[in-house]
Length: 241
Image (tube, rainbow, N blue to C red; front, side):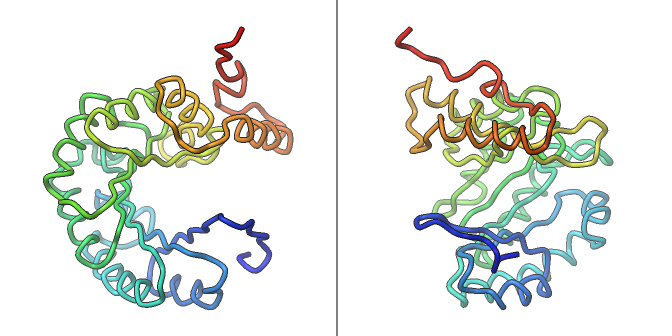
């Protein structure tokens, strides 16, 4: 797959790595990508369902993966799924999430992503979480929010995270993707919705919104079904009208 991708200049590719075997395979194509994203879940049940390991087993493996990736000159992000709630276990204690984040940081992760994998977060929870995260994890590590829009609160959660100092967000054009649990789960917040909101708030992103909308429109045509993006339907706000 990596060998088939035509990578434009100025574009960085990330590879999702679950374990050492995944890193070994990725390193066979080291010249084709720039970053690794390692991942695990913050609940035992979700981690077992996702990668068939306990949290400790996953962490122990990733603590071997991250130093090797750094030695290979790769930027490293550690992603913690179900950071705001688990469809199997319900409440996930923030203390557990922060403890996992510190171990990923100490192993070499330069960025920690907190995933609302099944769209269970709410804005009050998110605001408090990121206010604590900066203190619990410390400076020098980029903190990233990863919200799904399963219950329609994705952009509200972005605003709450912004108000607590988070400046990095993951999204997907057209709201593509999604977790199979629970029923009705959606993908990440739509990139075009996120960028549109930030631009209307006066926050520059460096993203060409018109081109993102065009990408989402093409994806919709390829898939032959409507996508979950509001901006794709309504179009960007035109202040000149």
